[in-house]
Length: 213
Image: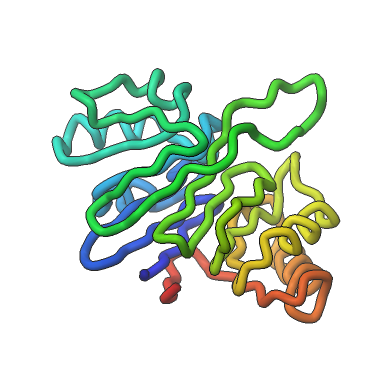
């Protein structure tokens, strides 16, 4: 698959001419372009930095072939659009073109006891790439490439290191990085990376950069 990184939590995965986009939120410049090229959009949870309701509502109206998958709160916000918006939960599986998607995880990571935890699902795409959304959920399947959140009010470096050790991916790609400066991103990658706490290489991609996974 070809993976293209967009700002913050948004990535696109393309295989055999079929593209899925994950978590195009309001903090992602270029999200509209990414969604415009997608056969389907996968949303992990309802927070604005992962889910741009206005963007997806307009895209669903403009494109009768577009599919959207997300937790019930996302589906309720968008409406069903003739069955093109599907509410998913842990344990569900589906395909988009030749891409196989398994839904894993249930809840957003705790920010503070006073802040409710919303539903949050992760997506394992083609048994290779796992996007956890805002959670440190460990899938039961082997994960080749883990998209690792590195900043946010819920993240913690020690917990991130333990998460990577539990998942044991071959490669880490940074996502959810907007709250870190360039120096912060590099130092986090050093601490969590191949010569740091996990022994696993961390790839930092700028918005618009791609690689093969």
